[in-house]
Amino acid sequence: MIYTIRHRTTYDYGKPVGFARCMLRLTPVSSATQTLIESAVCISPTPLRLLVGQGPFGETTRTIILDRPHDQLVIEARSRVDVHAPERLPSAAPAWEAVRVAAFGTRQLGADGPAAYLYPTRRTPCVGAITDYARASFLAGRPIIEAACDLMVRIHRDFTYDPDTTTVSTPAIEAFEARSGVCQDFAHIMIAGLRGLGLPAAYVSGYLRTNPPPGRPRLEGADATHAWIALWCGESGWIGLDPTNAVPALNDHVVLATGRDYSDVAPIDGIILAPGKQAIKVEVDVVPEAD
Image (tube, rainbow, N blue to C red):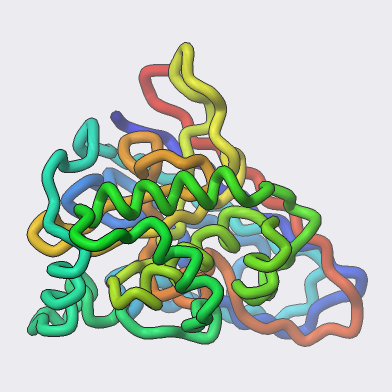
């Protein structure tokens, strides 16, 4: 399935901004499950400097510097991506305990290996309450994919999707205790629980198909950037799971970047020098070319 993606972010500032330095991660990756066909990023006003590079997890980065006063910044990314994920998750997988042993004994230290995704981060700490919540799905000897899907479904069932209860900086434990949040919170909670059990889990930033196929419900998180998790399953490889919607991340999901938590893959972050407030508007369209 080939998708055309439009991701437009508009910052309106209360007072002119004299200087801004931003990091953009707005180019979808190419991987075993998707191929980037083309991508472009347009920025207004035109930056003084633009440096294209690669982040530690293989994502394309753009660092921009603006040194002229401006009261609005518009960043629009357009991409075409061919998503060719399997139609379903693997039917067989090792027991989760065997995956844990393999993960801690791995020699794969690159971005595709499990080592970088085993340990807590500031946004995905090891918290006893979250680990215990996850442990209820991981019975002794249970296949890892079956257990992880059970955890995903429980998060979807037990937590309320509510954009008004958390912010981008809300700690995972606060969202967990409130049993409420958005896709970023649910991904962080699931990752913290899996890592607490010794399983490698990554944070995935990306997009959802804007309009579902006929007969299927619309997914929470469409029309904005979305987040889900990737779990390393040993010989079964990496699988994507979307706890916000309780579905595997397959052909309706487009990967933008993968990291340890949101801090590694934020689509746009940086600093500005200005005394006023700012308002942000994000518009996302993910449309299959067949439509």
